[in-house]
Length: 448
Image (cartoon, rainbow, N blue to C red; front, side, top):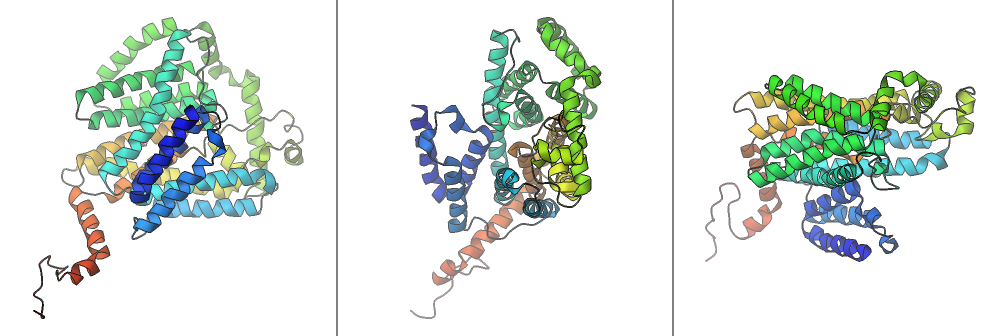
């Protein structure tokens, strides 16, 4: 029954997407962020992801949704990163092993680049944010209920065989969404929506604690600290945190507090030291292949790892770090490009926040979005140091929306650009009807 429902919903949405390309992009975002097909039982073996992506791209081309390709620094670096992915795959030490990961990352980047081009208004930006927040919000509510019913004795997990299947991954994803939930709550006009988003926010916090993930726990601390430093209500926030922490600490099981306490004893933790060995091995591969790296996930290969560090290779586990995954897979040059994407996104968000403080420069929502999106990126960057989430669409979508918001300088400017695009596209039709496209008035026909 789940298969039938999901296939019916997706096929129905694709019919709409053929007429409205952005509807296809929203469907693509929902599918790639939430992976609903994994909640079914195979969905009849239909390659839904390829079907959605292909239909959306076809609709964009047919409807001329991208009349002019918009290029800025962030988009330029993203395109360079895509080229480096292909270059890294070409010189991979094990092309067969790295090919699926390269293909997956490239598909993610295609989706993100389309988002940078298709988001041309506040409505579209908020629509994609809602897809991200509601998608993760489903798992936040589900995880919070599970944590309460089990008294936190068991870990909250995502969907098996997906990127969010690992408890560390789903915890960091939820932590990254916390600032975005607060942003949408601030933009909501109806009290019921504000209250609903606050419930989702509290459920997300409880679910993060329920994951038993040390990386996600550090992400919450970063979020709280960053939010507190940037806020004008420091005493009120500190008091609220203290009041909430007292019953929370009393309720969490001893196994949770014991696991969190190992953060200060990392050098004695076998799992952590296995990651450290993997970091050394990824660094060694980057030294030998500084331009292109060894290929995505190639440093996982034990036999190849022995060629660069025979002592650490047997003990090494997955790097579980966005930085070392890119360093070993794409080299020092690839890591520099990757960090440039995040850096330009963060500083663009900071610029939006500063513009928002100047009355009349940009609409107020642009400044607020810049503020909350930079917190979201900061939380992800800290959490990502302990998780292999470099291919996650979520944080890249935030960067894409920041790039789009930078072009939406004012409602008047956005509307003028849209009117200019429509007028240029249909000017020949207007001229055929005798309408002056420059002044908007009907011309006198010389033939009566």
